[in-house]
Image (cartoon, rainbow, N blue to C red; front, side):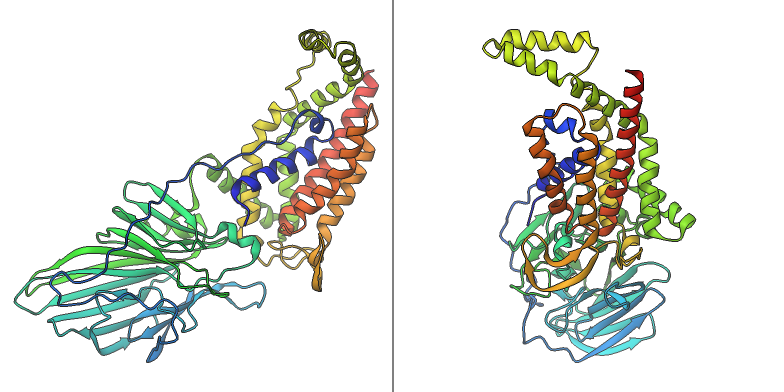
Length: 538
Protein backbone atom coordinates (compact mmCIF):
# COMPACT_ATOMS: atom_id res chain seq x y z
CA UNK A 1 0.00 0.00 0.00
CA UNK A 2 1.26 3.43 -0.89
CA UNK A 3 2.15 5.67 1.98
CA UNK A 4 0.91 9.21 2.48
CA UNK A 5 4.09 10.70 1.02
CA UNK A 6 3.21 9.21 -2.35
CA UNK A 7 -0.30 10.58 -2.19
CA UNK A 8 0.96 14.08 -1.41
CA UNK A 9 3.28 13.75 -4.40
CA UNK A 10 0.36 12.71 -6.61
CA UNK A 11 -1.67 15.78 -5.57
CA UNK A 12 1.24 18.18 -6.18
CA UNK A 13 1.80 16.72 -9.66
CA UNK A 14 -1.93 16.89 -10.36
CA UNK A 15 -2.26 20.54 -9.42
CA UNK A 16 0.83 21.55 -11.34
CA UNK A 17 -0.38 19.79 -14.48
CA UNK A 18 -4.00 20.89 -14.43
CA UNK A 19 -3.51 24.50 -13.41
CA UNK A 20 -0.01 25.63 -14.19
CA UNK A 21 1.45 23.29 -16.81
CA UNK A 22 3.14 23.55 -19.35
CA UNK A 23 5.44 26.48 -18.45
CA UNK A 24 5.73 25.51 -14.79
CA UNK A 25 6.79 21.94 -15.53
CA UNK A 26 9.93 23.14 -17.26
CA UNK A 27 11.06 25.09 -14.23
CA UNK A 28 9.63 23.38 -11.18
CA UNK A 29 9.71 19.71 -10.24
CA UNK A 30 7.18 18.29 -7.78
CA UNK A 31 8.33 17.84 -4.21
CA UNK A 32 7.31 15.43 -1.50
CA UNK A 33 5.00 16.75 1.20
CA UNK A 34 5.49 14.31 4.12
CA UNK A 35 2.74 13.97 6.64
CA UNK A 36 3.31 15.33 10.18
CA UNK A 37 5.34 12.99 12.29
CA UNK A 38 3.16 10.68 14.31
CA UNK A 39 3.86 9.49 17.77
CA UNK A 40 5.79 6.27 17.82
CA UNK A 41 4.06 3.36 19.51
CA UNK A 42 6.63 1.55 21.52
CA UNK A 43 6.09 -2.21 21.58
CA UNK A 44 5.59 -3.57 25.04
CA UNK A 45 4.99 -6.98 26.44
CA UNK A 46 1.30 -7.41 27.10
CA UNK A 47 0.70 -8.36 30.71
CA UNK A 48 -1.16 -11.57 31.31
CA UNK A 49 -4.57 -10.47 32.53
CA UNK A 50 -5.64 -11.82 35.84
CA UNK A 51 -7.24 -11.15 39.18
CA UNK A 52 -4.73 -10.11 41.78
CA UNK A 53 -6.49 -12.13 44.46
CA UNK A 54 -6.92 -15.04 42.02
CA UNK A 55 -10.68 -15.17 42.54
CA UNK A 56 -11.43 -14.37 38.90
CA UNK A 57 -9.06 -15.50 36.19
CA UNK A 58 -9.05 -13.33 33.07
CA UNK A 59 -8.76 -15.38 29.91
CA UNK A 60 -7.37 -14.16 26.59
CA UNK A 61 -10.39 -13.74 24.28
CA UNK A 62 -10.75 -16.07 21.34
CA UNK A 63 -9.88 -13.93 18.36
CA UNK A 64 -10.98 -15.84 15.29
CA UNK A 65 -11.93 -19.31 16.33
CA UNK A 66 -14.19 -22.05 15.14
CA UNK A 67 -14.73 -22.82 18.83
CA UNK A 68 -16.63 -19.60 19.42
CA UNK A 69 -20.22 -20.53 20.25
CA UNK A 70 -23.11 -18.28 21.18
CA UNK A 71 -26.32 -19.47 22.80
CA UNK A 72 -28.62 -16.91 21.26
CA UNK A 73 -28.74 -13.39 19.81
CA UNK A 74 -30.83 -10.43 20.95
CA UNK A 75 -31.79 -7.65 18.53
CA UNK A 76 -31.86 -3.99 19.58
CA UNK A 77 -33.11 -1.29 17.29
CA UNK A 78 -34.23 2.33 17.04
CA UNK A 79 -34.39 4.82 14.17
CA UNK A 80 -30.58 4.78 13.81
CA UNK A 81 -29.34 1.27 14.70
CA UNK A 82 -30.08 -2.38 14.22
CA UNK A 83 -27.73 -4.09 16.68
CA UNK A 84 -27.35 -7.83 17.38
CA UNK A 85 -26.03 -8.77 20.83
CA UNK A 86 -24.72 -12.25 21.58
CA UNK A 87 -25.49 -14.25 24.69
CA UNK A 88 -23.97 -15.28 27.06
CA UNK A 89 -21.11 -12.76 26.56
CA UNK A 90 -23.28 -9.65 26.01
CA UNK A 91 -20.98 -8.68 23.12
CA UNK A 92 -22.09 -6.93 19.94
CA UNK A 93 -22.15 -9.22 16.92
CA UNK A 94 -23.17 -6.62 14.32
CA UNK A 95 -24.13 -2.98 13.89
CA UNK A 96 -26.24 -1.76 10.98
CA UNK A 97 -26.75 1.96 10.29
CA UNK A 98 -30.38 2.25 9.22
CA UNK A 99 -30.21 5.82 7.89
CA UNK A 100 -27.13 5.26 5.71
CA UNK A 101 -27.67 2.92 2.73
CA UNK A 102 -24.86 0.89 1.23
CA UNK A 103 -24.53 2.04 -2.41
CA UNK A 104 -23.75 -1.51 -3.55
CA UNK A 105 -26.85 -3.15 -2.09
CA UNK A 106 -29.14 -0.21 -1.23
CA UNK A 107 -29.61 -1.80 2.20
CA UNK A 108 -28.49 -0.38 5.57
CA UNK A 109 -24.72 -0.05 5.89
CA UNK A 110 -23.11 -2.80 7.98
CA UNK A 111 -20.53 -1.03 10.12
CA UNK A 112 -19.22 -4.20 11.76
CA UNK A 113 -20.14 -7.89 11.80
CA UNK A 114 -18.20 -10.73 13.39
CA UNK A 115 -20.23 -13.34 11.45
CA UNK A 116 -19.99 -15.59 14.52
CA UNK A 117 -16.27 -16.05 13.92
CA UNK A 118 -14.96 -13.98 16.81
CA UNK A 119 -15.93 -12.19 20.00
CA UNK A 120 -17.62 -8.88 19.33
CA UNK A 121 -17.48 -5.30 20.55
CA UNK A 122 -17.90 -4.92 24.33
CA UNK A 123 -16.81 -8.51 24.96
CA UNK A 124 -14.79 -8.49 28.17
CA UNK A 125 -12.16 -10.52 29.93
CA UNK A 126 -11.90 -10.30 33.69
CA UNK A 127 -15.54 -9.49 34.42
CA UNK A 128 -18.26 -11.73 32.96
CA UNK A 129 -16.23 -14.34 31.08
CA UNK A 130 -15.89 -16.66 34.09
CA UNK A 131 -19.29 -15.83 35.58
CA UNK A 132 -22.55 -17.72 35.08
CA UNK A 133 -25.41 -16.02 33.24
CA UNK A 134 -28.54 -16.04 35.43
CA UNK A 135 -31.06 -13.93 33.54
CA UNK A 136 -31.58 -11.58 30.60
CA UNK A 137 -34.05 -8.71 30.31
CA UNK A 138 -34.65 -6.74 27.12
CA UNK A 139 -36.83 -4.29 25.28
CA UNK A 140 -36.40 -2.62 21.87
CA UNK A 141 -33.40 -0.47 22.85
CA UNK A 142 -31.94 -2.11 25.97
CA UNK A 143 -30.68 -5.53 26.98
CA UNK A 144 -29.49 -6.37 30.50
CA UNK A 145 -27.50 -9.48 31.49
CA UNK A 146 -27.24 -10.69 35.09
CA UNK A 147 -24.28 -12.87 36.17
CA UNK A 148 -23.14 -14.57 39.34
CA UNK A 149 -19.57 -15.57 40.12
CA UNK A 150 -18.46 -18.12 42.73
CA UNK A 151 -16.13 -15.47 44.25
CA UNK A 152 -19.17 -13.61 45.51
CA UNK A 153 -19.51 -11.08 42.70
CA UNK A 154 -22.85 -10.23 41.13
CA UNK A 155 -22.52 -8.46 37.79
CA UNK A 156 -25.15 -6.53 35.87
CA UNK A 157 -24.08 -5.71 32.28
CA UNK A 158 -26.38 -3.48 30.22
CA UNK A 159 -26.26 -2.25 26.60
CA UNK A 160 -28.52 0.62 25.58
CA UNK A 161 -29.16 2.44 22.28
CA UNK A 162 -29.49 6.19 22.79
CA UNK A 163 -32.17 7.97 20.79
CA UNK A 164 -31.21 10.23 17.87
CA UNK A 165 -27.47 9.70 18.32
CA UNK A 166 -24.92 7.23 16.95
CA UNK A 167 -24.30 6.18 20.53
CA UNK A 168 -24.37 2.79 22.28
CA UNK A 169 -23.95 2.88 26.06
CA UNK A 170 -22.42 0.11 28.14
CA UNK A 171 -22.70 -0.05 31.91
CA UNK A 172 -21.62 -2.54 34.56
CA UNK A 173 -22.79 -2.74 38.14
CA UNK A 174 -20.48 -5.06 40.08
CA UNK A 175 -21.63 -5.97 43.58
CA UNK A 176 -19.18 -7.62 45.95
CA UNK A 177 -21.29 -9.78 48.28
CA UNK A 178 -18.24 -11.26 50.03
CA UNK A 179 -16.55 -10.01 53.19
CA UNK A 180 -13.22 -9.30 51.46
CA UNK A 181 -12.30 -6.70 48.90
CA UNK A 182 -11.57 -7.93 45.41
CA UNK A 183 -9.10 -6.42 42.94
CA UNK A 184 -9.61 -7.11 39.27
CA UNK A 185 -7.94 -6.44 35.96
CA UNK A 186 -10.29 -6.34 33.00
CA UNK A 187 -10.29 -5.58 29.29
CA UNK A 188 -13.10 -4.58 26.91
CA UNK A 189 -13.08 -4.82 23.09
CA UNK A 190 -13.62 -1.42 21.44
CA UNK A 191 -13.48 -2.39 17.75
CA UNK A 192 -13.68 -5.71 15.90
CA UNK A 193 -15.39 -7.23 12.87
CA UNK A 194 -14.65 -4.29 10.58
CA UNK A 195 -14.50 -5.02 6.86
CA UNK A 196 -11.29 -4.47 4.93
CA UNK A 197 -13.16 -2.41 2.34
CA UNK A 198 -12.06 -1.53 -1.18
CA UNK A 199 -8.43 -0.89 -2.11
CA UNK A 200 -8.98 2.88 -2.17
CA UNK A 201 -10.31 2.72 1.42
CA UNK A 202 -7.27 1.08 3.00
CA UNK A 203 -5.18 4.22 3.44
CA UNK A 204 -7.95 5.75 5.59
CA UNK A 205 -8.31 2.77 7.95
CA UNK A 206 -6.56 3.73 11.18
CA UNK A 207 -6.35 2.55 14.74
CA UNK A 208 -6.61 5.66 16.88
CA UNK A 209 -5.91 6.33 20.54
CA UNK A 210 -6.27 9.70 22.24
CA UNK A 211 -4.87 10.04 25.76
CA UNK A 212 -6.26 12.34 28.43
CA UNK A 213 -3.39 14.74 27.77
CA UNK A 214 -4.68 15.05 24.15
CA UNK A 215 -1.76 13.09 22.70
CA UNK A 216 -3.05 11.33 19.58
CA UNK A 217 -1.57 8.06 18.34
CA UNK A 218 -2.54 6.63 14.96
CA UNK A 219 -1.38 3.61 13.05
CA UNK A 220 -2.49 1.56 10.09
CA UNK A 221 -5.45 -0.61 11.02
CA UNK A 222 -4.08 -3.50 8.97
CA UNK A 223 -0.78 -3.55 10.86
CA UNK A 224 -0.31 -7.08 12.12
CA UNK A 225 1.97 -6.22 15.06
CA UNK A 226 0.66 -6.64 18.61
CA UNK A 227 0.85 -3.34 20.43
CA UNK A 228 0.12 -1.91 23.86
CA UNK A 229 -0.26 1.83 24.39
CA UNK A 230 0.18 2.88 28.01
CA UNK A 231 -1.35 5.98 29.52
CA UNK A 232 -4.58 7.46 30.82
CA UNK A 233 -6.94 6.63 27.96
CA UNK A 234 -9.41 9.19 26.66
CA UNK A 235 -10.77 7.14 23.77
CA UNK A 236 -9.73 4.31 21.47
CA UNK A 237 -11.00 2.51 18.41
CA UNK A 238 -10.88 2.61 14.63
CA UNK A 239 -11.56 5.22 11.97
CA UNK A 240 -12.41 4.21 8.42
CA UNK A 241 -12.91 6.22 5.24
CA UNK A 242 -16.47 7.20 6.12
CA UNK A 243 -17.13 5.79 9.60
CA UNK A 244 -15.67 5.43 13.06
CA UNK A 245 -16.06 2.86 15.82
CA UNK A 246 -14.75 4.57 18.94
CA UNK A 247 -15.07 3.56 22.60
CA UNK A 248 -14.87 6.21 25.32
CA UNK A 249 -14.26 4.99 28.90
CA UNK A 250 -16.07 7.13 31.47
CA UNK A 251 -13.96 5.47 34.16
CA UNK A 252 -10.22 5.09 34.58
CA UNK A 253 -8.52 3.15 31.78
CA UNK A 254 -4.81 2.36 31.80
CA UNK A 255 -3.90 1.06 28.36
CA UNK A 256 -5.05 0.23 24.84
CA UNK A 257 -4.17 -3.13 23.32
CA UNK A 258 -4.43 -4.45 19.79
CA UNK A 259 -3.72 -7.79 18.21
CA UNK A 260 -4.10 -9.64 14.96
CA UNK A 261 -6.58 -12.52 14.89
CA UNK A 262 -4.93 -13.98 11.81
CA UNK A 263 -5.08 -13.56 8.05
CA UNK A 264 -8.65 -13.20 6.85
CA UNK A 265 -10.15 -11.82 3.66
CA UNK A 266 -13.25 -10.49 5.40
CA UNK A 267 -11.97 -8.61 8.42
CA UNK A 268 -9.46 -5.85 8.96
CA UNK A 269 -6.88 -7.80 10.98
CA UNK A 270 -6.69 -5.60 14.06
CA UNK A 271 -8.85 -6.03 17.15
CA UNK A 272 -8.66 -3.05 19.51
CA UNK A 273 -9.53 -2.91 23.18
CA UNK A 274 -9.17 -0.94 26.39
CA UNK A 275 -7.75 -2.31 29.65
CA UNK A 276 -7.80 -1.32 33.31
CA UNK A 277 -5.55 -2.60 36.07
CA UNK A 278 -6.31 -2.70 39.77
CA UNK A 279 -10.09 -2.19 39.91
CA UNK A 280 -10.84 -2.37 43.63
CA UNK A 281 -14.29 -3.54 44.78
CA UNK A 282 -14.62 -3.14 48.54
CA UNK A 283 -16.42 -5.78 50.57
CA UNK A 284 -20.20 -5.46 50.56
CA UNK A 285 -20.11 -2.55 48.07
CA UNK A 286 -21.10 -1.97 44.44
CA UNK A 287 -18.94 -0.38 41.73
CA UNK A 288 -20.33 1.07 38.47
CA UNK A 289 -18.38 1.17 35.20
CA UNK A 290 -19.57 3.13 32.14
CA UNK A 291 -18.43 3.17 28.51
CA UNK A 292 -19.81 4.88 25.42
CA UNK A 293 -19.41 3.61 21.86
CA UNK A 294 -19.63 5.98 18.92
CA UNK A 295 -20.65 3.93 15.87
CA UNK A 296 -21.41 6.19 12.95
CA UNK A 297 -20.21 8.52 10.20
CA UNK A 298 -17.16 10.77 10.45
CA UNK A 299 -19.42 13.80 10.71
CA UNK A 300 -18.53 16.64 13.07
CA UNK A 301 -22.14 17.40 13.93
CA UNK A 302 -23.03 13.79 14.76
CA UNK A 303 -19.85 13.19 16.74
CA UNK A 304 -20.14 16.39 18.76
CA UNK A 305 -23.67 15.44 19.89
CA UNK A 306 -22.13 13.00 22.36
CA UNK A 307 -20.27 15.79 24.16
CA UNK A 308 -17.27 13.50 24.62
CA UNK A 309 -14.89 15.11 22.10
CA UNK A 310 -15.11 12.10 19.79
CA UNK A 311 -14.84 14.56 16.89
CA UNK A 312 -11.12 14.83 17.69
CA UNK A 313 -10.53 11.64 15.68
CA UNK A 314 -11.29 13.64 12.50
CA UNK A 315 -8.13 15.67 13.05
CA UNK A 316 -7.48 19.30 13.83
CA UNK A 317 -5.50 22.22 12.50
CA UNK A 318 -5.58 24.23 9.29
CA UNK A 319 -6.45 21.40 6.90
CA UNK A 320 -9.25 20.07 9.11
CA UNK A 321 -10.77 23.54 9.51
CA UNK A 322 -10.63 24.25 5.78
CA UNK A 323 -12.07 20.81 5.03
CA UNK A 324 -15.07 21.54 7.23
CA UNK A 325 -15.63 24.83 5.40
CA UNK A 326 -15.40 23.09 2.01
CA UNK A 327 -17.87 20.43 3.15
CA UNK A 328 -20.33 23.09 4.32
CA UNK A 329 -20.02 24.77 0.92
CA UNK A 330 -20.57 21.44 -0.86
CA UNK A 331 -23.72 20.82 1.20
CA UNK A 332 -24.99 24.34 0.49
CA UNK A 333 -24.50 23.86 -3.25
CA UNK A 334 -26.33 20.54 -3.03
CA UNK A 335 -29.30 22.31 -1.49
CA UNK A 336 -29.31 24.69 -4.47
CA UNK A 337 -28.86 22.12 -7.25
CA UNK A 338 -30.27 18.94 -5.64
CA UNK A 339 -27.48 16.86 -7.16
CA UNK A 340 -24.02 16.23 -5.74
CA UNK A 341 -22.42 15.94 -9.19
CA UNK A 342 -23.60 19.45 -10.06
CA UNK A 343 -22.58 20.54 -6.55
CA UNK A 344 -19.02 19.26 -7.14
CA UNK A 345 -18.85 21.24 -10.41
CA UNK A 346 -20.20 24.28 -8.59
CA UNK A 347 -17.63 23.81 -5.83
CA UNK A 348 -14.81 23.71 -8.38
CA UNK A 349 -16.06 26.86 -10.12
CA UNK A 350 -16.59 28.68 -6.82
CA UNK A 351 -13.08 27.90 -5.58
CA UNK A 352 -11.56 28.84 -8.94
CA UNK A 353 -13.39 32.17 -9.00
CA UNK A 354 -12.24 32.94 -5.44
CA UNK A 355 -8.66 32.03 -6.34
CA UNK A 356 -8.76 33.75 -9.75
CA UNK A 357 -6.44 36.65 -8.78
CA UNK A 358 -3.74 34.25 -7.56
CA UNK A 359 -4.21 31.91 -10.51
CA UNK A 360 -4.07 34.76 -13.04
CA UNK A 361 -0.95 36.22 -11.44
CA UNK A 362 0.75 32.81 -11.47
CA UNK A 363 -0.14 32.10 -15.09
CA UNK A 364 0.96 35.56 -16.20
CA UNK A 365 4.30 35.13 -14.47
CA UNK A 366 4.81 31.81 -16.21
CA UNK A 367 3.80 33.25 -19.56
CA UNK A 368 6.38 35.98 -19.05
CA UNK A 369 8.96 33.33 -18.24
CA UNK A 370 7.97 31.40 -21.35
CA UNK A 371 8.42 34.47 -23.53
CA UNK A 372 11.99 34.85 -22.22
CA UNK A 373 12.97 31.27 -23.03
CA UNK A 374 14.64 32.08 -26.40
CA UNK A 375 16.79 34.78 -24.74
CA UNK A 376 17.63 32.50 -21.82
CA UNK A 377 18.71 29.77 -24.24
CA UNK A 378 21.05 32.20 -25.99
CA UNK A 379 22.62 33.18 -22.68
CA UNK A 380 23.10 29.53 -21.76
CA UNK A 381 24.85 28.84 -25.03
CA UNK A 382 27.03 31.94 -24.75
CA UNK A 383 28.14 31.34 -21.15
CA UNK A 384 27.89 27.55 -20.85
CA UNK A 385 31.51 27.42 -19.58
CA UNK A 386 31.10 30.30 -17.11
CA UNK A 387 28.38 29.49 -14.53
CA UNK A 388 28.87 32.72 -12.58
CA UNK A 389 28.49 34.87 -15.67
CA UNK A 390 25.55 32.76 -16.78
CA UNK A 391 23.72 33.36 -13.49
CA UNK A 392 24.52 37.06 -13.53
CA UNK A 393 23.30 37.59 -17.10
CA UNK A 394 20.16 35.55 -16.45
CA UNK A 395 19.28 37.63 -13.39
CA UNK A 396 19.94 40.82 -15.32
CA UNK A 397 17.53 39.58 -18.00
CA UNK A 398 14.84 38.93 -15.38
CA UNK A 399 15.43 42.36 -13.87
CA UNK A 400 15.30 44.13 -17.24
CA UNK A 401 11.97 42.54 -18.18
CA UNK A 402 10.61 42.76 -14.60
CA UNK A 403 10.03 39.02 -14.35
CA UNK A 404 10.19 37.12 -11.06
CA UNK A 405 11.30 33.51 -11.71
CA UNK A 406 9.46 32.39 -8.55
CA UNK A 407 6.34 34.39 -9.39
CA UNK A 408 4.54 31.36 -10.79
CA UNK A 409 5.31 29.17 -7.79
CA UNK A 410 4.41 31.39 -4.83
CA UNK A 411 0.69 31.81 -5.69
CA UNK A 412 0.49 28.05 -6.19
CA UNK A 413 2.02 27.38 -2.78
CA UNK A 414 -0.46 29.77 -1.17
CA UNK A 415 -3.27 27.66 -2.63
CA UNK A 416 -1.87 24.35 -1.39
CA UNK A 417 -3.83 24.24 1.92
CA UNK A 418 -7.07 24.70 -0.02
CA UNK A 419 -6.24 21.98 -2.55
CA UNK A 420 -5.24 19.49 0.14
CA UNK A 421 -8.41 20.26 2.09
CA UNK A 422 -10.49 19.74 -1.04
CA UNK A 423 -8.73 16.44 -1.68
CA UNK A 424 -9.66 15.27 1.82
CA UNK A 425 -13.29 16.37 1.46
CA UNK A 426 -13.86 14.77 -1.94
CA UNK A 427 -12.16 11.53 -0.87
CA UNK A 428 -14.00 11.18 2.46
CA UNK A 429 -17.33 13.02 2.19
CA UNK A 430 -20.01 10.45 2.91
CA UNK A 431 -22.44 12.66 0.97
CA UNK A 432 -20.78 11.46 -2.25
CA UNK A 433 -21.15 7.80 -1.26
CA UNK A 434 -23.85 6.47 -3.56
CA UNK A 435 -24.55 9.91 -5.12
CA UNK A 436 -25.46 9.72 -8.83
CA UNK A 437 -24.58 12.04 -11.70
CA UNK A 438 -25.18 11.36 -15.41
CA UNK A 439 -23.84 7.82 -16.00
CA UNK A 440 -22.06 7.76 -12.63
CA UNK A 441 -23.75 5.59 -10.00
CA UNK A 442 -21.42 6.42 -7.13
CA UNK A 443 -19.36 9.62 -6.95
CA UNK A 444 -17.27 8.05 -4.18
CA UNK A 445 -15.97 5.29 -6.48
CA UNK A 446 -14.49 5.13 -10.01
CA UNK A 447 -17.15 5.66 -12.70
CA UNK A 448 -16.87 2.15 -14.14
CA UNK A 449 -19.28 1.53 -17.03
CA UNK A 450 -17.89 -1.93 -17.76
CA UNK A 451 -16.18 -4.62 -15.70
CA UNK A 452 -13.67 -6.96 -17.33
CA UNK A 453 -13.38 -10.65 -16.54
CA UNK A 454 -9.63 -10.21 -16.00
CA UNK A 455 -7.31 -7.28 -15.43
CA UNK A 456 -6.06 -5.30 -18.41
CA UNK A 457 -2.71 -3.45 -18.21
CA UNK A 458 -3.18 0.19 -17.12
CA UNK A 459 -7.00 -0.14 -17.08
CA UNK A 460 -7.29 -2.74 -14.34
CA UNK A 461 -10.57 -4.62 -14.16
CA UNK A 462 -12.95 -1.84 -15.27
CA UNK A 463 -13.46 0.81 -17.93
CA UNK A 464 -13.64 4.24 -16.28
CA UNK A 465 -14.75 7.13 -18.50
CA UNK A 466 -13.99 10.36 -16.59
CA UNK A 467 -10.21 9.77 -16.37
CA UNK A 468 -10.12 9.11 -20.13
CA UNK A 469 -12.02 12.37 -20.75
CA UNK A 470 -9.52 14.18 -18.54
CA UNK A 471 -6.61 12.63 -20.41
CA UNK A 472 -8.09 13.62 -23.80
CA UNK A 473 -8.76 17.16 -22.62
CA UNK A 474 -5.22 17.46 -21.26
CA UNK A 475 -3.86 16.50 -24.71
CA UNK A 476 -6.06 19.16 -26.25
CA UNK A 477 -5.02 21.70 -23.62
CA UNK A 478 -1.31 21.17 -24.29
CA UNK A 479 -1.78 21.49 -28.04
CA UNK A 480 -3.86 24.65 -27.68
CA UNK A 481 -1.61 26.42 -25.16
CA UNK A 482 1.88 25.42 -26.34
CA UNK A 483 1.94 27.89 -29.21
CA UNK A 484 5.18 29.66 -28.36
CA UNK A 485 8.81 28.51 -28.20
CA UNK A 486 8.73 24.78 -27.43
CA UNK A 487 11.85 22.66 -27.22
CA UNK A 488 12.10 18.90 -27.59
CA UNK A 489 11.93 18.34 -23.84
CA UNK A 490 8.68 20.27 -23.61
CA UNK A 491 7.24 18.36 -26.58
CA UNK A 492 8.04 15.07 -24.89
CA UNK A 493 6.46 16.19 -21.62
CA UNK A 494 3.40 17.43 -23.50
CA UNK A 495 2.97 13.88 -24.78
CA UNK A 496 3.73 12.07 -21.52
CA UNK A 497 1.92 14.20 -18.95
CA UNK A 498 -1.64 13.53 -20.21
CA UNK A 499 -0.88 9.81 -20.09
CA UNK A 500 0.48 10.22 -16.57
CA UNK A 501 -2.69 12.09 -15.60
CA UNK A 502 -4.81 9.25 -16.90
CA UNK A 503 -2.84 6.73 -14.82
CA UNK A 504 -2.96 8.89 -11.67
CA UNK A 505 -6.68 9.55 -11.82
CA UNK A 506 -7.88 6.27 -13.29
CA UNK A 507 -8.90 4.63 -10.03
CA UNK A 508 -9.72 7.82 -8.13
CA UNK A 509 -13.33 8.42 -6.99
CA UNK A 510 -15.45 9.97 -9.73
CA UNK A 511 -16.26 13.02 -7.57
CA UNK A 512 -12.58 13.88 -7.25
CA UNK A 513 -11.94 13.40 -10.98
CA UNK A 514 -15.01 15.50 -11.82
CA UNK A 515 -13.72 18.32 -9.61
CA UNK A 516 -10.27 18.41 -11.25
CA UNK A 517 -11.69 18.03 -14.75
CA UNK A 518 -13.86 21.10 -14.11
CA UNK A 519 -10.82 22.84 -12.64
CA UNK A 520 -8.78 21.99 -15.75
CA UNK A 521 -11.44 23.34 -18.11
CA UNK A 522 -11.74 26.57 -16.11
CA UNK A 523 -7.94 26.99 -16.08
CA UNK A 524 -7.82 26.44 -19.84
CA UNK A 525 -10.16 29.38 -20.44
CA UNK A 526 -8.08 31.53 -18.07
CA UNK A 527 -4.99 30.65 -20.11
CA UNK A 528 -6.73 31.46 -23.38
CA UNK A 529 -7.96 34.78 -22.00
CA UNK A 530 -4.48 35.60 -20.73
CA UNK A 531 -2.89 34.74 -24.10
CA UNK A 532 -5.40 36.97 -25.91
CA UNK A 533 -4.75 39.81 -23.49
CA UNK A 534 -0.98 39.56 -23.88
CA UNK A 535 -1.35 39.46 -27.68
CA UNK A 536 -3.48 42.61 -27.67
CA UNK A 537 -1.04 44.44 -25.39
CA UNK A 538 1.86 43.43 -27.64
